Structures are given as C-alpha cells and as structure tokens.
Image (cartoon, rainbow over all chains, first blue to last red; front, side):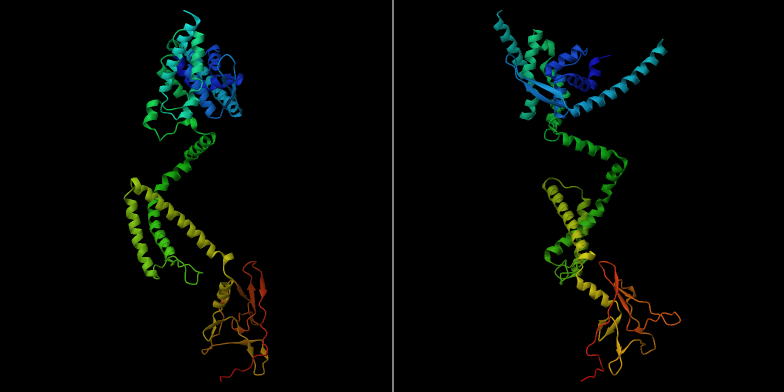
Length: 111
Length: 331
C-alpha cells in the first residue's frame, strides 16, 4: 500500500507530535519525521502543514538568529495545539485499535 | 572544481528552483505569499547542501513542490484559485475567531430543527410581499404626517391616512400590496436593480420594526397619559347629565341635607343603574338589600378606586359640597 496516501490523513498529527516533543524549524521537522520512519513525507507537505497549523492558531513561532546560516523560524506547540494533539491522538488510537482487530480476524480467516 | 564553483552551482540551482516555485503562487496576495514562502530559499539551500546534486532529484519538479505546498497549507490548487478569484478567500488568512464562528454556524445549521427552519423560511416570502406593500403605505403616511392622529396621542392604525383621508390610505394599501406581490413573483432582479431591491427591503423591514416599537411604547400602560385614564373611568359609569358623563349621584332634600339612601328609577320604573361594573379602575361595592338581593340603583354609590400602578383599592371619598347644594331654579 502507498504510504504517501496514508500520510496525507495523519500528517497534521505527525507534525504536532514532532513539534510537541521539541520546538523545531521547517527542515528540522522534516528530518525528524524521516528519522522516525516516515520516509514518504514530502518536504513541501511538511512546510505547508506547519504554515496551516500556524495560521490555524495551533502553533506559535520565534526566530533564532544565526551568524553563519540563515535565521530560523522555530515552531512551538501552544495550548490549542496541545489540545488538538491530544484529541487527534485519541482518534488515532481508536482507529488503529479498530484496524488491528479487523486485520487480526482477516488473518485468522486467511490462515 | 573549486569550492566557490560548487557554491555557485548550488546557489544557481536554488535560485532557479525557488523562482519556479514562487511562480506558482503568483495568484496570492503579497503578504500571504511571503508568509508561505518566507523560508523557501533557506530550505532549498539546506537540502542542496546536505544532499548534493540537483534539487529536482531530491524534491521533484518545482511545480509538484508548489502544488504539494499549496495543498498541505489548505489552499486551493493554483488553477482553481484563479477560477474562483475574488470569491473564495484563501483559508490561510482566516482568523481563529472567524474559523470558530463559521464552525459553530455550520454546527447550528446541521441541527435538524435549524435545517427545518431554514427550509421553511422561503415559504414566508409571499407573506413578506404582502406585509411589504402595507408597510410601504405606512411609511408614506408617516412621511406625509398622516400616521398619527391630530392630537398627537393616538395612531391612525391599522389604516393610515394619506392626504388626510383614510379611504385613500386603504386604496393605496391595496395597490401597494398588488405591486409588491407582482415584484416578488418576478424573482430576484439583477445588477443595480438587485441592489436597490435589497436596500428597499432592508429599509422597509427596519421601518416596520421601528413602527412596532413605537406602537408598543404608545400603548404600554406605563406611558399612558394620566388624563386618558380619567376619561376612561368617567366614560364607563354609564351615567349622563346634560350629555356629560357623571360618575355618581348625590341627593339632598330641600333644606340641603344629604340623603344617604335614595333609589332612582326612570319614567318606566326601571332602576337607573350605573354600568361601570366592567371598569377595572372602579370597583363599586356590592349593594344588597336586607334579603341579600343586589340593589344597583341606590345612590350615592359607594365606590372604590383601583390604582392602576399598584392595583390597590381605596374608597372614593365623598365630595364635600359647600355650601350644601339646594334647589337649583332656572333663571
């Protein structure tokens, strides 16, 4: 199954989880998602998701000046973002539980 | 190749790629585009430095990158945005409050009762057409000064006067309702006529609300002028002398002594009865004879007065006649 399709539905949750773990700038979030095993995630999708969550009031930001490289805009989870993360996590858990059960019985039929 | 050469290649690649991506956002207003693309070059630079090789190999075509960015940011695709330009505002600019309002509005309208009401509302349109014609005549009457009676207290309602004639007002109402219904059945107008129609409807609606409030204020008990209450009390006694309303009768003998108890009958022997039993502001004490039968024609009547404000009852004091009335002879 194409992971990219699955990712579209849960990219918000994945990005919220990564930023909730630690503040991060755009490409940092991309890297951490990849490191977590989500290889199929597109750079542009992560940037766009960050912008949308920011515009929707789930993230705030601060800029970290740097002497060598570019100034970086770090994103922070705020209260609304944390609430959204908790809510989406619960939804995700319920969904995966249901899918797990479904697939387990499928497996028994196949076996 | 020197280091500078590599950097030049990277810089050139980043610039080309960034330009191509930015081109796909040309339809967005400047500030919004900037917010979306503010660290595009930094991102591309970091990717290029890290991976080496052309950016397209690592990120795909710039057009694909742009489309992905648009979609994940919640913006319509570039073509769709152009097609609906000016109508659908990109969601990125929507504030949190607006978003919540929109969501709660949708939630409200999703409720079955709200949906049923919304479905039912268009059926009220013909009723508004009729009301609109009537309200238009009321408005005209108000402008011409024929809505309120000449003493400034009462309202010529429900039929207003036009040029001093209520008949003319009635004819105008019939005509206005016919025109209004015809306009309504023709359906929504287009262009400037539509704007005119919306403005006219809004103005008449506002006037109707204003008129209702005004009528309410004029008829509310608290605002009733005191003299109107007095008139009401006298009018309902049912007793008249010389064509003028009187509220009680006091009898005296030839020497000016008051008679406490007289019974009045008319030329046919029928009792002369004051009929203010239905006056809420006057409460005649029940008059009964020794057998317990009501004696409605005994005078002077013992009367009680009800204070309209507090509802408290009090005896109406007998007037003091000085000097005591005696026989009145015509000159």
